[in-house]
Image: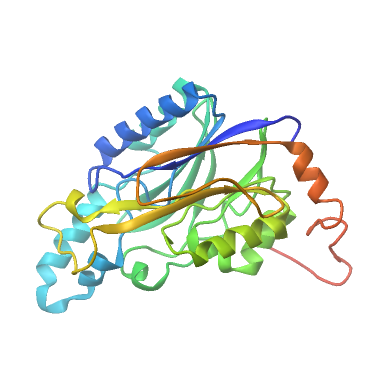
Length: 297
């Protein structure tokens, strides 16, 4: 990082199960964040068109109601994005129109399989980073396919080196180290984990990586869902957020934001990043490549 940069961590609800309307909301949110001076705008996990909450994804395993389960999966697949494709180009256009770096979580369809993807678009609209979640968590395994090592990198940008992992991938030490080894400075951690304990994770990662961590979290309401999607009993909020931006010392720069939509902003100062790396740099002076061998396949 060479200069301070303002980033936006977005906690807004998608237009659930509606890809095109969700992308329209993404574009308007990008316009707002860019007008407020953000050079990087980050959306939550599986924002387009919805994160599969355990309160409805569980029904995908219901053999006795197989037709209903198939209908819900079919709808999610049809509302997912394809790369390349018209929907992904509309996301690219939002980055291009506002001259921003744009990171968004999406359900990505390839043939008949849906993947959980983290997509980072450059200000010229090019897809600069494409990562699919390595392992789906718990109920998610009924929804998403298995990702690959593609995208376990930190891409150089004029803002700094940007990379990221999706939700509980951040519990995987070797996946994290892949980003550290690539020189990550702005670490993206989009998530659906809306618990207090998630914050122990992102604050630890900030201190371990000595990087800035931007972690937008899913916000969803039961009342926003189509009537034909069965949802188990529980509170109105399926995802209560908890988005935050954390500095390389593990302290909050913005948030956490709970139980409402909003955009968090923070200015990331490279002076703080380098100051925190004086005593600890996980892939630099505090690393022992003569002892440890690391490889990403």
